[in-house]
Image (cartoon, rainbow, N blue to C red; front, side):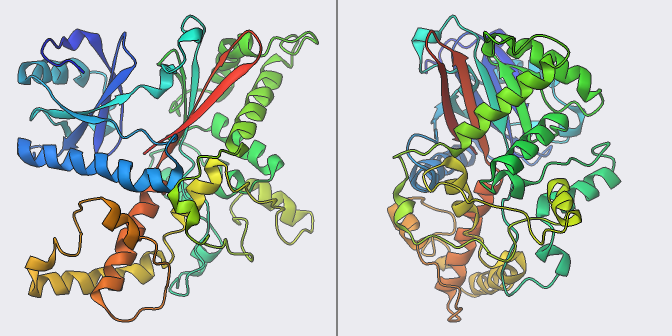
Length: 424
């Protein structure tokens, strides 16, 4: 990317999370990812550069190994003119959500440059066709089966559903979503359809839909979702025109959304030969006794109808949901089992601070780091090495729990072209 002549007017606010903010180029299919900090807590330019390189290496040498070469884009670190950064910071400030403004965009001089996955830039033959991108943040897809888990509710309800009650009680959202990650990760098409429809009805931060790179649906808790869904269906009509009148009549919106969900389900379950090097690691078994969450609205219907547990068919091993779930399940001890190990490492470093780099606590994220993640034993031998390995596995698992799956689609002359990526 050429950085000598940068014009802030060519960049638009795209979104942000707790630790970073994204701006997108108005013409080219690229985005810039900036770190965010609390006021007066900014890092030096050198430390920002190193932090961004660690993120890049983590994606390239760790997450790609678990999710597959074609599913993770790690980008590159670029140096940007300071004047450009100052003007860009002022330009996007008014577009940022108020709830995110407690942190400021870093303007020390460095950012990550990544492909804009919402615009499907890799397929020039569909350049002039409408491009939709559905971003799904599935969250944690299993209930912990760790012997260290002491809270009974954590053995019955998933973390996402528990947090829904907390967020509504604190006023972050107006209503509890019917979405449950365990339904999406079940591999059971009926449960998956229910989960995706629930995301459409209450997207919160877990589903966004872009058209030609512009957000058209998602995160609008203050509006009536039915009118939003009608507008979304209007955008999607060109995708689902059929000879049998699928988009006509009073059921137009319902039919279009059902067809969209069918396409998404098919994509999420599709397998790929790009299984990643981590496929050679022994699979972590999903708890057979708990394949559903008791807070799931879908599963509550099953229980009311006298069934003891919701049906599950399992995920195909080559699909992106399976690989994501397996990576999440590197969290084998739950936070209750991990915390004592964290305290063990903390105490050790107080006594031997020079060992921090030897233990690879801050990287580098390379082959040596990845090899240490393969040790799946949960038998604590009391060593500092065991504790560090479990902490690093937990970090990888938490990254997978908070990743986004990006599914881009556009009509072609013969068929719909669908591509999926992981963004984390």
